[in-house]
Image 1 (tube, protein in one colour):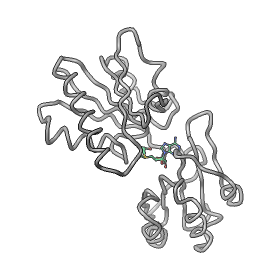
Image 2: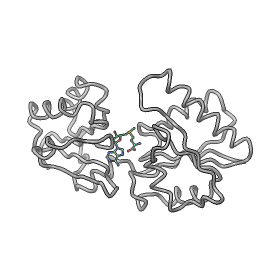
Image 3: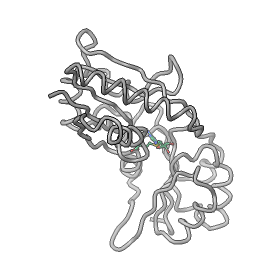
Image 4: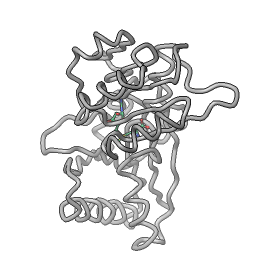
Length: 236
Ligand SMILES: C[S@@+](CC[C@H](N)C(=O)[O-])C[C@H]1O[C@@H](n2cnc3c(N)ncnc32)[C@H](O)[C@@H]1O
């Protein structure tokens, strides 16, 4: 029976794909790649393109707008789920590819809910991916947690109050989606005396990877969307 696979493709380096992900991507009949704008390159698709046989496999670019407006997002999620369910009903295996891990702040989580509610007959499997968090920690040899330390992961877009709360209560704080609130985050890190225990990583696993630990350099940088910070209570 045909199936949907949510495949985590890692942070952007094809060598950081699991062997299971590679096998499924080679076998799938349809690859669905999320894009935020028509014609835009998909990081997930570029990561796996070398494995695909475009003469045999169908590649669908499905648009998920970069917005918090649910009036635009819900139809995009429903449209993707219906498109995938339609392929499965025709006997085709579909791989939904996503950067990092599919169950860590990924669009796939919204689709999972829709599959459960509207297409319960569709068989579904999640293939975990190496997250941008693990890769960033690895490239900088910057430990995430040891012994009885506690770690929090927060999209900075949740608001500065939540960021401050996490920095106050946790030994390590991972901040995703730092771009929109970058200057506010920098100000808080200065106030909380974290200048010497902050790692900034952009586009990890790609040729554009940037890894910064010097706070002055971090503060001079203009981050792009694929950037994160890992902040420890004290320097490692
Ligand atoms: C919607 S979340 C996706 C997380 C992803 N599912 C994962 O497991 O890494 C997007 C955020 O993850 C972080 N991110 C994803 N890929 C990244 C990369 N290659 N380098 C640095 N940060 C990345 C950024 O903070 C970005 O704003």
